[in-house]
Amino acid sequence: MLCCPKCGEKLTDEGRSFTCPNRHCYDKAKSGYVNLLLSNQMKTKLPGDNKLMVQARKSFLDKGYYEILAKALQNNVKEYTFADCNILDAGCGEGYYTEKIAEAVSGIAKEIIGIDISKCAADYATKRTKSALFAVASVFHLPIETESCDILTTLFAPYCGEEFLRVLKSGGIMIMVIPSERHLWQLKCAVYDEPYQNDVKDFALSGFELIKRDTICGNIDISCNEDIMSLFSMTPYFYKTSEENQQKLVKLKNLTTEIGFEMLTYKKL
Image (tube, rainbow, N blue to C red; front, side, top):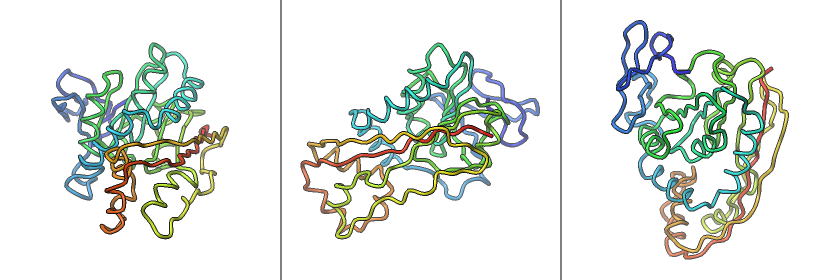
């Protein structure tokens, strides 16, 4: 599914690099991912999640705290998977959910690609699983061939309707996961004097038909400060919270908090 970010021609895997018919060449990193993010698409020198956030997310997710979501995602993706279909995970992060998808559709799907703007995330993802190909790129400039994807997943990632519609085939499926209103409510209560619920916007999306909505919710018990801090560090709250409020978590040894997710399944019109 990969195409050249400079000219749009199909990329061919040459082993250590990807090349297009116009001789644009993109070397693979040592771990195996390919960087297809052009300099004019970068707003900072190191776009996307930094190493601290990526490591925090990997540490937390690997302990199974969000397993309830991972299993629901696997079941949903498998429902729409057919022989030799192509799957794109847009904004894949360090590859936890990409790996779960690959496990669920092993032997059925033809190609699975994970895209993330963070080099660090792509590196971790590639080391996590060899069942998918990972590339560094922006979801707003996907190096993916037009109408080449049968299924697109996007979990807690920026939404770019124009690009998602472009890369999906007619009738293709998009599975989006967003936080529910009370996701991590008790964590917020431990940090903020006046916590607020998440703003869940209208589910209607131009060019898509919402065909299914699943609300996945539960509670998680965290019994060590390291995991509490990892959870906080992997959320958007981390960089928006004052040092004073962050310190409220430093000595917290136990936390039970609600988790909640909206899994929205769309069909391209």
